[in-house]
Structure formats: structure tokens, C-alpha cells
Image 1: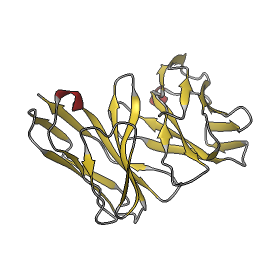
Image 2: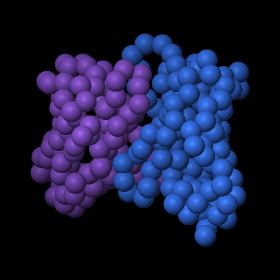
Image 3: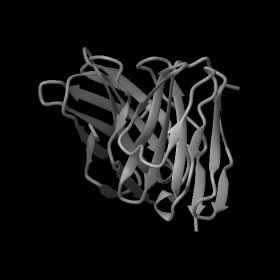
Image 4: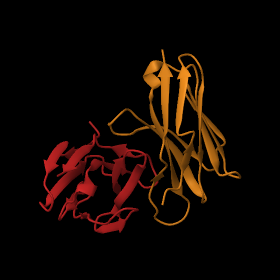
Length: 111
Length: 112
């Protein structure tokens, strides 16, 4: 089944404890992206990647890192999480200029 | 920066009525896409319309695109309670390697 898989789905952590949210797609898509969704703010793009080893900042990159060493994986790294990073995170992938396939979401709470 | 802006922010209708939501954007586009999101879940693609198309249909969905006004509309006909969700437009720009940019969405409530 064609899908985007992100883990963990739910996570409660504490301020400053590094965490990684993994994202993997099995559709050989070039483009991958991370979004965060907060009430009243819609989806805001954190980082995106047009292909392997190519990543760019989105609208809200502060406090996040990404890497794209393989085509299928695009992990999101929070080096030192803070409470303002409590959010619902989505990973998505698509062929170039195509339709996005979204993961199921990762709900992160930072205490 | 958010390219697409949906209007209205929220819409409440009775089952069987039609629902129309609008999207405005700022720059020239390659295509415009509409997505649906059930509460707290991932977005699901509904329909894609290219910049050289003016109207597209898919089941009960009708999308129009007016590139001169930089706007699009999504019409859901004969709405059902199951259509209750948030709807987002997203644009792919025409130049360079630029990502899909989403608006803030329209929250649709269909009352049975």
C-alpha cells in the first residue's frame, strides 16, 4: 500500500530532551515536507526537500532540523524542544508538482 | 508565507444543501489543489486543477479556477453529514522549485 508512515504518533516529552520524528514513504517521491498544525493557524511548513541531499526552510524552521540522506526518509529533529513546539505534525510526500500524500500525524506535547 | 487564503473560515449548512468555499492566491501557479481533513487526521487530496483549466468535476465536487482573479472555488453539492471536515486549498507555483503552500482552511459543518 502506498503510504507515508510517521512515528511516533503520540509523544509527551520534556523541555530540552532531543527527539526525532521519523517519516518514510514507499512511493519513490522526490518531494517531502514537514508541516505543523496549530488551532487557527492552519498548516505551516517547517522544512521541505525537493530530492536527496536537498532541503530548504519553510515558514517556521526555527528549532527544527531535517536531513534527506535517502529518498524514502525525511526525519524531523527537535534538538532542544520547547513548549511552543507542542503541536500536531504532518509529514507528506509527492512527485514533483504533484499531489501530496500525508502521514497520519504525530501529536507532540512538550512539558 | 501562506499563498492561499480560504473564505469563509467557517461554514455551517443543512444536509442536502450545497457548500461553496473560495480560495485566493497571490502569484502565478502551475496548479491548485483542494484537500480535506477530518479532525486531527492527515489531509486527503480531493482534486487538482491546472492553470490552463477553468473547471473540473469529481463526483459531487466542482472546482473552478480563475487565473485572472487568482481565485478558485470548491462546490460540494447535496452535502452530507459525512462531508463535515476542514477544507484546504494549496498552490504549486509556476517558477522554480517551490513547495506546495496551504491556506488556513474552511471548517465545514453539515447538520443532519
